[in-house]
Image (cartoon, rainbow, N blue to C red; front, top):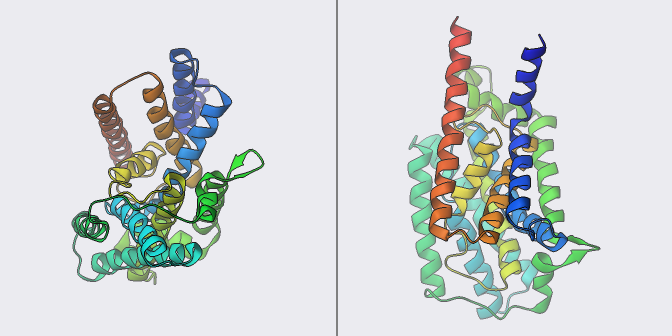
Length: 320
């Protein structure tokens, strides 16, 4: 009985044990890792990943995927920067327009997936290419800068010793957790991800769930793009390049199933921190960018493989 309890404990808190192990390893490897300035930097950098992950978790729980997140971040970076610099638009209004545009992109993805039945992988890959191209066209391939000083507060400001992006991330995580756990349509996300046909027969409006999930994903990706723009103070056509990989990896590491129906915000937070600690620790240890890509790819492969093995094991137990 004691052995069973230990196994259950390890299974339940494995992600946190991995997080703790990484902190210990990088603390030993680099004396700079545990400095307060570096810890603040890690959490601040994780905020943009965390905000975008809140949106992606809805899509993954219903059994979908959104590969356009990185391009949406880039697109919002460019159009918000363009509106402020080339059109003299107020930063708040420009940001709202950018987030509104990203939400519409998400709604479009959900509408196509739900109504035309094109696999989400293909739909979001197409929109990824489309809006990455639009970003290049609008910016002419060049960075856009020269924003009002007030705009930098969102990405670079502090409330006391806490960076504003971190506060925004915490608010988004709480909002995401509330939607999933305390609302009736939050339960619909899990129902659709577990069995869409049974959910529809039970009266769940599956199409509307898809619309909402992808729209939320677009909204949070847009918000992340605005925070990133304020943080870097420059609209870059490569701002969100590969960003969707980090978002998906963080959520899979945090226990969000790639097949849908399972996942929580609390565990996703650990996955987000793991991805950011890996990035920060690799830089401090002088590991090359290309080797980082190899390691992160292996991490994603192992995480997805573990998830699939768990699903197969659960399926076998149910059949038995």
